[in-house]
Length: 464
Image 1: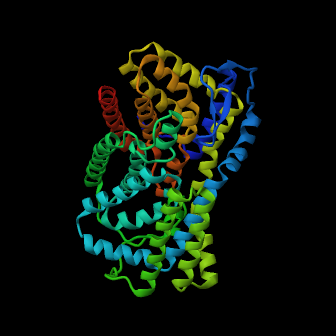
Image 2: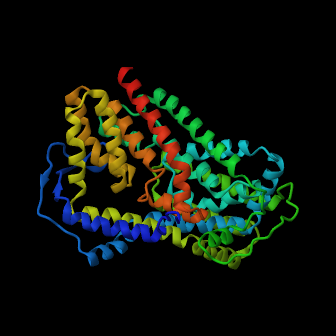
Image 3: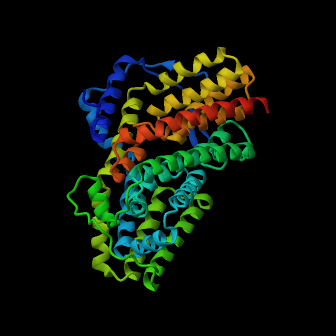
């Protein structure tokens, strides 16, 4: 009997868009009233105001029209992916990355576990600090440069990057797009409960890193020479790219000009983190920063103006497919919002929680957030939609608001690991050349284990 094959990512996204359109004919249309919230600077729902509205079914052609609308809505993210991908292709064309990787592989030797731990912690920190996700898409070819010579497969590259970042984000006490916005909406002091979150974060990261190491040891093969970034991206997209069988002698040191390029990259990330945390940067500022990094790296690395421009173009080409998936994923939400069915789904899922005991209600909130994240794949958007509804429920049944925030973080944040409507995740699978089913085969068991950890953490938080 032939094994079940998952649809092509583009076919999957298109199918989800059509399914969203069909739901607008089946699910009753309804809405919550909304108001401007001065604390968060966003429009939030008003609890207790759900009401039915006239049906607004989305026809087949209208659903297709929502695809370019989704691309337009996701334009800042898409441009970030293109510009970051182009910038790192420029850096790679200078030879700095491959020279640094050669030095790293020589220093590490056969201590792959060290690489897995270090890289996972770096990306988990990015997730914890600024909800890193889409930025990872353009970094996947860089990760493949590191993992391929060590004999680690592409699933491992995904696990130490997008997987570790999602785990870091889901348990972080400082993530501005999850914990902080949810605490603001719940009327809680920022960073409250940080000690408890850090303990759970440490346990969750240990579980994720152990699972990644276990997978890596089972799938490790002989190391292969790294491809240039643009070639790696095009190969993942299905282009015919020659792959050498043997690596040339890897350089054991980084020369001065390439060291200067790496210094530019490091400085860029320092500015990037400062801009996110202190200056409130959005995708436009991030894109501009990485574009400037690419220009500086190309000129310092000796590519010249023409060589730098050509490298950018190669990077754009390698990121095109992955970037388009983000727009298709956004179109799913556009269709559901246009059909006025998202609020109906929220109301239907939240209402039964009022009749449950506090412990079961907390677990139910986490599961509701996990389910809702399939149709609302934006963590900040989901906080704005659900927290104003769930907080009054928690007050009514005597459940701590801090537990409600935890249930939101655990449910929505961890779902980023597996849901197909997460455009960043699907784009990373494309950039890494990994079938979505292969990723699920690794990620789902770990995800379920982490959900059990979260359930235990919610019980502990209730009784603290």
